[in-house]
Length: 128
Image 1 (cartoon, rainbow, N blue to C red):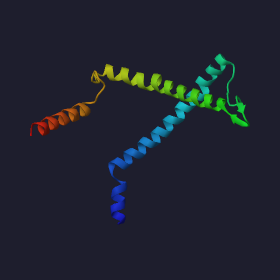
Image 2 (cartoon, one colour):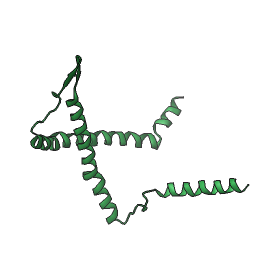
Image 3 (cartoon, helix red, strand yellow):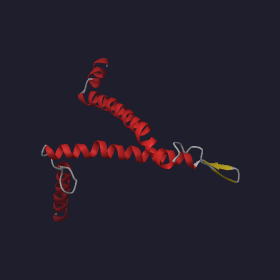
Image 4 (cartoon, rainbow, N blue to C red):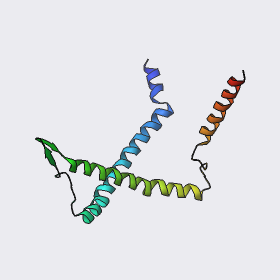
């Protein structure tokens, strides 16, 4: 039983997954720092407020903290923009320089192949 457990742990997929998680966490910290230390101060300079969490309104004794939502929304949009402009676009440019092209419709080769297999199976089933 212990030998099987050891074999399970030493499988390539487990080790690769663990490495991906560690790299992902480190990358998340990097993007969070980029947003908190660079992008949020720019937004604060433009809008004049670095933190919107104090913005609220009350209806019938219920307090709506829409400022916290605005903070989360700005953080989300900032993180998405940072990933797009500092990761996705540079990687696309590098892949183009290396001659690695994506299909025009954005589908992977595997997806195209699976669709062809599906269509052949449909035609075969429909013909029978």
